Image (cartoon, rainbow, N blue to C red; front, side):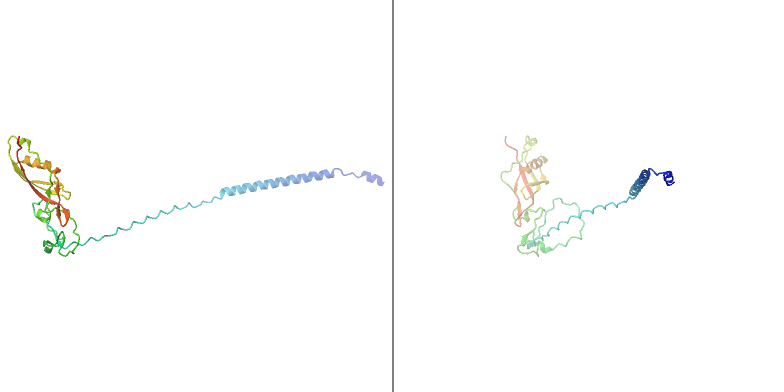
Length: 237
């Protein structure tokens, strides 16, 4: 009887295989879950990275370069004191035809400055041994120690050919300024008297070639107004 009962119990087969299949299914499910979770996290991180944009502040422009230092002002040199002497009246080139207006802003003229004593170009309250300031104004002949004189060898003016047939003689008195280099300033040339305009033109044409000894006043070369008389004689043929 016991044999029949034992034989009648169904034997369980394939238990190990079922367990293996169950383990495999669970492993697949877990792997899928891990895979899905990992990729879902990557998408969330990627999305978060795409959305988290930080705007940085633009850098400020650099400050302008500092201004270069200005050069120091030039040293002021005091003018030397004028010498003890007198002022020299300068000759007018263009004589006005009316009395000029009085300029009250100018300093009052001191008559002591025109005593004629001491150094020309100085002042009555000047110092002995002072330096007279050079002036660009022309002097009269009586105001200089050495007047301007024509140099030797200056060419003679040409006698006008239009007057050769009449062989007339004539004279010219011209006025002009001789500068400190001994040249005539033609812009100041004036004819004071002429017996014939052709004689005056002949003198004016040759005068730029003339050279003079410049005038001197107070130990300096100065400009001088020169009045030059010249006589024209017909040439001998």
